[in-house]
Length: 402
Image (cartoon, rainbow, N blue to C red; front, side, top):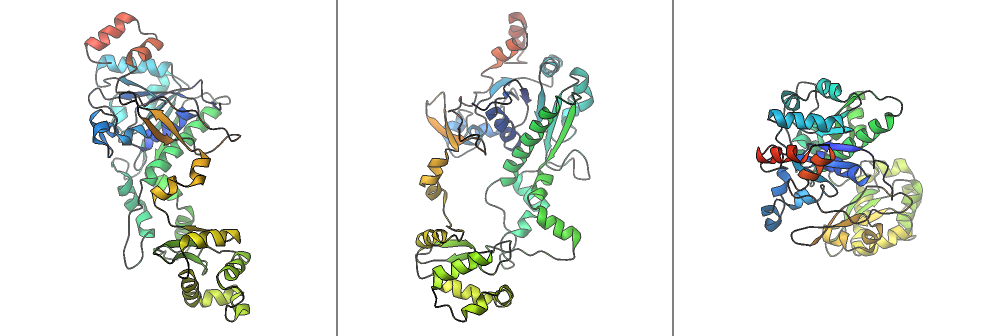
C-alpha cells in the first residue's frame, strides 16, 4: 500500500470540517493522526448530520466522513498539567494542526516560537478563516460566510436571480486539501531543512485561488465580471446548459472548432442553414443568441440521456445534470472506487467515506478503521508517549486526559 507518511505523527486539534478533512487526507497517506479533543463534547461535528441516532452517540455523519483512521484523546489544554502533557506530545511529534481563531492557540501558551523551543523541527499548520495576518485575521467564519466575503457568490446565479451560495461547502474541503498539500510539502522539505515551519492556511485565500483567473482579470483590467448562471466560463457561444425533452438539463462544452463541427453534425446533420457561415468563430460570436436558440431547439427533440451518449460518441463533451442518487448509481462511479467502507463500532454498520483524491498505480486504499469514539484511545496514546501507568491514572482521576 502507498503509505509515504507512515513514520509521521500528527497532533490534530482541528474540528468541524476543513482541518479534519486535511488531517484525514494525511491519515490516508499513512500518517499517525492523533485527534486531541475538548474534554466535554469533543469535535463539534460529532453531533452534526442527518442521522439523529448517530449524532446522539457523538458519531454524527458530519464527523464520520473525515475522521476515520484517526485515534482520539480527551485532553484539557486549559490546565497546567494538560499543557505539560501536550508539550511532551509536541516534543515527540512531527506536525501540529489547529484551526482556532488566530491568537487563541498562542493564548493557551502554544505560539509558534514556544513550540519550536520544544521541538526545533516541528511543523505548525494553522487553518483559519482569513489568515494569521491582515485586517480580518481576528474574525471567525464558516464556508458560506467566506463564499460571500471572497466574491464566489457574485459569480453564481444570474443578474436576475442575484448572488447564490454554492451548494456544498467546497471552500472547507478545498482548504483541507490545501492544508494537506502544505503539510506534505513541509515534510518533504525536512531532508534539506530541519528548521521548524509555520504554515498559514486560510479559507479566504483558498477561495480566491479557486478563482485565480477571475481575480487576475480583475487586478489586471477594468473588466467588470458578471454572474453567468449556467453559461460556460470559456465564453464559447456553443457551450452552456440546454433543456432537453422530459425536463432534463444538458451541459455542453463545444469550445474548439472540431468540437463545434461535431456538435453541428450530431444535432443537425447536414441541414444547418448557412453552415459555412457558422463555421466561422467570429460569425458565431456575433450571432451567439441565434446560435444558442438553434442549439436549444435541437436539444429539446430528445432526452438529456440520449444526447449525452450521442454527443460524447462524437467527441463533444456533454453530460446530463444529475442528482446524487443518479451519480452514485452509475457504473463509472462504482468503477472508480473512490469511496471506501468504514465499520462503525456501536452499530456495526458499514459507512461509505471518501478515499484519496488520486490513484497510485490504480491501487485503492483498504477499508478504514472506524472513526474513534471520543477519548477512545487516551490510555494507549499516553502510554506510547512514555507516560507511566501511575501518571496515566492520575490524569484520568483529575479528568485532564481521559
